[in-house]
Image 1 (tube, rainbow, N blue to C red):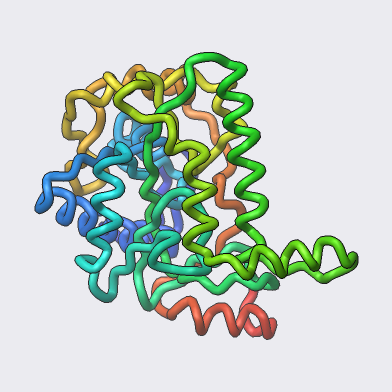
Image 2: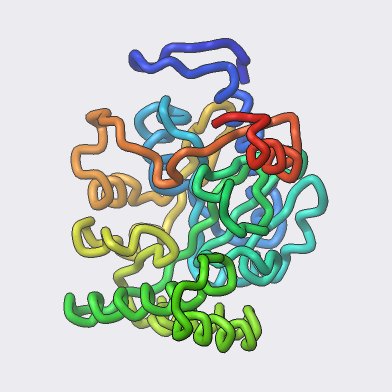
Length: 294
């Protein structure tokens, strides 16, 4: 990657962001290597898929790479976490006990990608630069069933966060409930949370969704159909050819509507402090002491 400041579509991409992109590209290439070695299907997804189709690379204001897999191959990948030796780390609820999200992230040691909201929290998970690895599960056929399933998933996630979030105790009731949930193993509670949507098997549910992200958009976005992923095509993303669903037009139309018309939207991650040269543990200490600024 060319490490010079660049204007893309009137938006300035800084040298610092290009260095972050290069780390993410390394992570993506590692993921593709492991998936190819084990015959696992993975596709570029979301804003990254949009970038591959429209920009042949990153959307100028994007700060991450999104990948996605079907549930059976995703579970196989998680079982292969040991293949990602340092400086790589495959992060999921079963490899990082402070991490309570419904998807995996591939992280890079010796770097930092710290959310502003985590600086003063009790967050204790790996916070190196990452790419997202999302997973498709089935979706109920009726709107009523979908709304009920989303509500139940959100309810379980709120309870799961007892393990990863700290708040001052103001009432005895919440404190007792926290103690009760902490007596349970994190793995059991995470499996209980995940079962709220894993129950919708891909074999019997032609409509699919990434339940680990943006649940509130399930009804406002168009339906994503599994058969759009039956075939794979290769698209250029910066200097690398990446797998994409052959039905990428249908996918992007469902997600974004008129996807060829650029419109800047905020990242779902919020405000992130990136560092390509220092480990997240050091950067976090400095942020908490006020020695570094966002």
